[in-house]
Image (cartoon, rainbow, N blue to C red; front, side, top):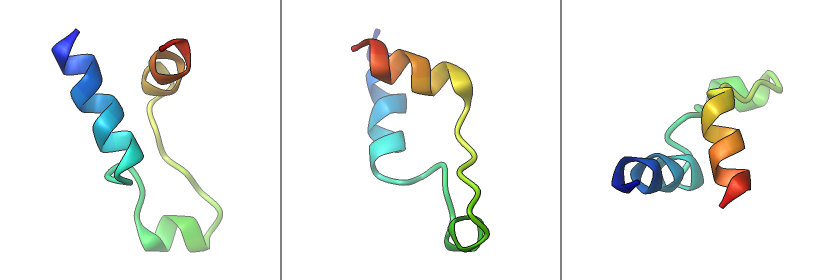
Length: 40
């Protein structure tokens, strides 16, 4: 469970995205991470 919270924290801090990806309209986030964060 602790690992899940660390991953969600990284997601919220923007560690899964870069400026270049955002400029191109891409958001590269693992699906498992999105599902887990939405579940909580």
